[in-house]
Image 1 (cartoon, helix red, strand yellow):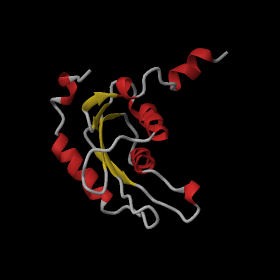
Image 2: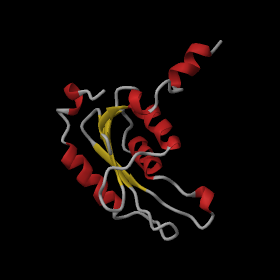
Image 3: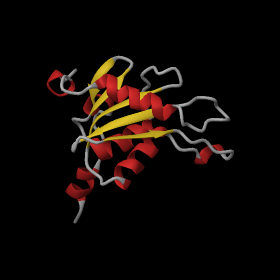
Image 4: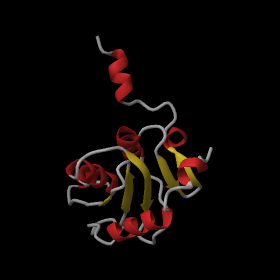
Length: 139
């Protein structure tokens, strides 16, 4: 399911290095599980985010939340490729909520570096619900 036509033109090492840098700024005093993420935007920018925990566990923010917030804050656009890492710099699969966030801002063709290699979002979140579903079902 790997799409080398897209993933071959992406500097995954550089993208992952930005994710590792972001992970270093994570606020994870409770779980001690730091996460960083970096995304390549369709205009060439790289945006990043880190997880931010809270004493009220349910209001903690995943790294991908910070990523999409930074994407919007810095001008918007579409995510082309994303690398997410754990506190050791290893590729980490985003949680379900974050997969939905990535789908919203990257769509089916966005590439994700996973522990099993580079995969399109269509393989990560098959039959995803997204903006097109709302438009198609609107009156």
